[in-house]
Every structure is written in structure tokens, then in C-alpha cells.
Amino acid sequence: MKTKSLLFALLVMLGSFTACDLIDDGTDDGGSNIINSDITTNTTWESGKTYVISGSIGVDGAILTIQPGVTVKFETGASLHIGYYNNATLIANGTSSKPIIFTSTAANPTAGAWEGITFWDNSLNSSMQYCKVQYAGKSNEGAVNVKTCAITFQNNTIDYAKTYGILVNSEGSFTSITNNTFSNCGDHPLRMSAKYMHTIGTGNVFNCLADKGVNIYAGDATGNITWRKLDKPYYIEGEIDFDNGTLTIEPGTILKFDANGSFHIGYYNNSTLIANGNSSNYIEFTSSASSPAAGAWDCVHLWDNNTSNTSFQYCKFKYAGKGSSSDRAALKASSTSFSLNNCEFSYSGGWGIYLFSSTYTGSGNTFTSCTLGDVGHN
Image (cartoon, rainbow, N blue to C red; front, side):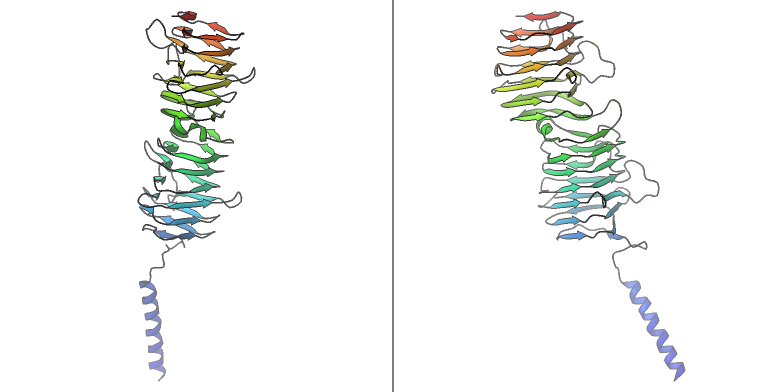
């Protein structure tokens, strides 16, 4: 009896071990939760736990809530996608004492160890607050990517992005982007279109290479909006057009234009530009070239529908006046009027100012090394 009882007990124990081996509890040996399939029902990742992303994971038709204190690790090449096929939401709101960490599974990760987080067209009301995003991104993309949607992005840190910290497409924007820190990005920490440039909020810190900042690519802007002073310059690619509203540029703002850069006000609709710096915080329109020369970029151009309320005070116009035409200048005005006070024009490849049937009022303006002269008229 004792022998049979012992044999029976051993068989029960063996069966128990075999049954356990057959159960997949969704964790690895270190107690992490393995995520290797898309999320299509409302899901919560719980505080204090670690989740490992394997492959490309989509959140579609569902809300993914990540609680404070969660760590999300990504295997090599892994990524997280919100709202690619159906309406979806990511709520990743940590706290100052319990941030949410998005990082790599690698023991010694480098920039681009995983591919990043992308908010697609069907992302609704997504929010990241008090998150740390580390070692993400790939060539020509961001650690975080915002497609045709708007997200809340506050009190986050992006570190060691392969290229951009955040890449926003032409119709992507922010309901709020404040108090974030960007460090050690391979390129500009933030790249977005001119249309939503005004959604960039306050308190952001851009720790980046000396020739990098907030990268703005060509497009139209409209409405009663403000371009805020940042701790780094705006780097502008191509032509920006502002129409139908009032654009205010904060004192101390620096706008650097590439070789094709230009800035047009009031071409189609009534528009006003208020670019009023002060004696200790000039607004600067200049070149993005590392060693600029006269004529490195085109100009600021006020068109027929520019209103007489347009005002420049304590502005610097440097290295503009690109081209070979006789009317090239740093500041052009066509059939309009404006005010200009205490502004500096230097190293224009043409005139400092060129007026086409236009007038301006003001005083205290200076002109230095403008190739064709101070002010030209048609």
C-alpha cells in the first residue's frame, strides 16, 4: 500500500508539472508580460508591472490605458501603433513620482533600438503625460510620430531618439505640448508643418545639437495665432504663407530660413503680422546656414491684403535678399502699408527694404552692408 501510494503521489506531482508547462501565462521568466498580438478590446496595463512588446503591435477599436509606474520594453525593431484601422486611444498618463517608461529590452541600448510610437489618423483623444521615451525611432522618423490627428503631450522626456524626437505630418498637431524635455536626438527634436506651429506650447526644453531646433516645413498658416519664443530657433524649410487672421510673434523668437525659405503675409486675405520685440529681446529673421552670406534666403514679403496694422519693432533681418532681380530685398511690400521701428537690416543680397507702391512709418531703423542699398522703390 505504501509503495502504491508513493507511486500515485509521484504521478500526481509529475502531472502537475506537465500541466504547468503547457499553460502560457503571458509572462517571460523575469515576470514581464509579453505583448505579441494586437489590442482590440479595452485594456489596462497595471502600475508596477513590466510589459514587453514583441513585433509591431496595433491598438485598434480600443482604449489602451497605461497606469503610472508601468515600464514598457520593446524588442529590437518593435513598435506601437494607435488607431491605424479603427478609432483607438492611448492614455499613458504617469505622474512625477511614477513616470511611465518606454524603453528597449537591450542590455546596452543605442538610439533606434526600437522603432517608436505612432498615432495614426484614427487616434482619438490620446494622451502622454509624465512619460520617458528612450532609444526609439528610425531613419527619417520620430521616436513619437503624429499622423493626421491631435494628441496631448505634457511633462514628458524623449531621450536618444535616432532621428527626430517627434515627427508630425502636415495634418498632425497637439491639443497641448508643454513642459517636455528633448535630449540627444539625432536630428531636430521636433519637426512639424507651419500650419500647426502655433500649437507648440510653453516650458519645453530642447537640448540638441548646435544647428538644430524646431524644424518647420513649408505650408500655410491661418487664424488669430501666436508663434511662441522657444529656447531654440525655428528652422524653416521653404515657403511659409500666412493668410486670414493676425499672427503674433513673441519677443525673442528666432526664425532661421533655409536657402529656399521665404515668409509671405496677406497674399489672398486680410492679414496682420505683429512682430514686436523689445530692446533686450529682438525678433530675428535670419539664415539657417552654418556660415551664411548675403542672399542666403529670400525675404519677408507683405502683399496687397496685408493690413496697415502690421508692425515690426526691434526686429533683425539678416542675410536675406536672395536672387539676381533688381528688386531683391530682405523685406518687400506690395501695395500696402505698415509700421517699422528700431529694426536692423544687415547683409542683404539686395536692398534692405523694397517698396512696390507701398509706404511705412517709423524711426530708429538701421541698415548695414545691404548690397543694393537701404530702401528701393519701383
